[in-house]
Length: 250
Image (tube, rainbow, N blue to C red; front, side, top):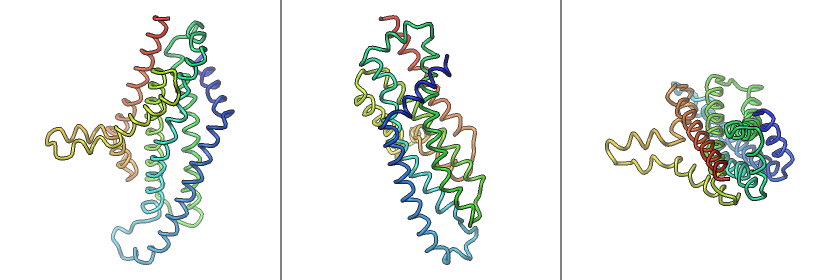
């Protein structure tokens, strides 16, 4: 049943003009930045000779591109997840879904899998840009793989948070705004810990980009992967609990 719900959600995204518009705008923006980064790298290439270690195209083009892609996902995901449950509640179809022989866990995981598949497809399209450089340059595929893993885990975390906040309101615009606000808070939370002594490491650990930066450098550490998995699992658990409460109240 999870796969059925996921397929339904994914089909709805592919039939949505909004999703295609957002995808096209994201790819167009990243392609423009990609070309700018390549041009800047060509201008710096002569001055990099003799540096030890000498930074390559992976460090100066691909890593910055993936950092910008993370910001793009921060803007894109709330607009994709805002309708997951808000629209169902607004039009009254959520009650029908909850009365069907399917558990809240299956509903949440199905919808999550659907939107996550769309986001991972977006990451795959982004990956084609750096991979195109392999034709005429030497890439560090280890760093590239770690960076794409980080971007995928970040997308999974964003989707889980957006899905949960979509269960709290019947207004998609409110869900999108709340999701963006929450994700932005986790994005800059390390700034709140600056100069706070013993508290600072906690804020640093909670900050979403801190773990992505390590992966972009090619450092795949269990602590960073676990952070994103726990972040996603926590919001999925909250969404299941919220949906269960809605079913009991209905």
